[in-house]
Image (cartoon, rainbow, N blue to C red; front, top):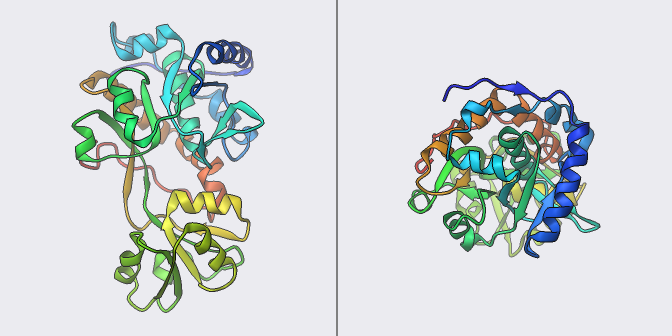
Length: 317
């Protein structure tokens, strides 16, 4: 889709507008919805200020007549299916319900800027089993909700992306310097959650590792901090949440298995899918995707920033 982009140079004027819109939307929306002003993500507002200042905005020609994106522009708010309790991804501040921060939410605000010119979003928290229904019936425009792309789901709705690849990763005590990922776990004692994919994945990757399992994630974290294992293998985003809550551990390296997250979109809307994928390509190329990762999920890792995934690289995308 050909288009010309214009860049936002300041955000100050829009913040007041968003705040007033947020108060109005909050008063008129359902009790499980929240209109949200822009935040700086889990890494702090200052770290993302320039990202918002320079966020791309689609030219009017890209907002095709009678399209989903034109309707969102006219409405003035992007309706987003997203969690309220996912640390570093989409977490609501209990003391300020309008403040929701994290990787998914910051990306949603960037998409709102691209369509509307302002970071105006309204959050509808979905249950996992209702995400397809919310898109099919038009309750939300998009879903940012660690939404794994599958061919089965893609028969019911559409996916843009993938925009992030999660999967099994490695956490270690914060003072550990000799483990940087799965390749360093040979001969080590590795903690896994019982009945999780790590039970079989670790021996497949490192046959000489000694695997010890615990029933729950908190028990695994406790065992790691108590020195009952050298590393803990679990899903990357869960480890990131654990590391945020416990300064005694850190995530090292990138996931060594793949679970591709997509942006859920309404079914049978190829123009909107192409539009969102075009936006993703732009924030990959201009570095803003990486900056948002670094300020959120990246704050609990080892400082390495992953390469964004290739659009359309998994079945169902």
